[in-house]
Amino acid sequence: MKRIVSSIDCNSALGKRAYAMIMLLIKYGLRSGDVVNLKFEDIDWENKIIRISQNKTKRDIKLLLLPEVGNAIIGCLFLCLSL
Image 1 (cartoon, rainbow, N blue to C red):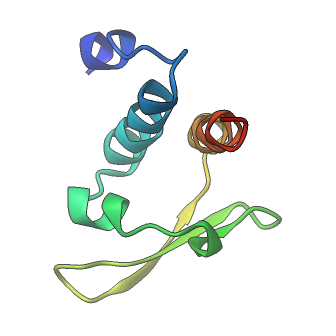
Image 2: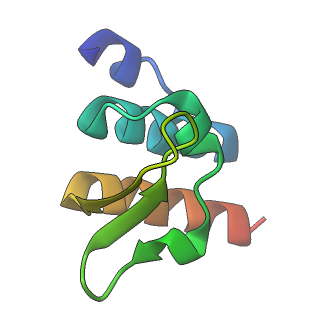
């Protein structure tokens, strides 16, 4: 996992996006479909919660927004918005 994360070029928009997605996969053990379907409104920044309706099980789950995951998502958003 460490090798995969360290191989990502976080200086590009694609790298930032890949890093954010990988962090969601690694830190929460989410399925790729759940990460792909994640929307900005699924993140409650104020309460530090991610709400996901799992694609496979159809269960709604709440996850604590970890600082490293939140920072990865923000980094991706800011870089993409500045393009």
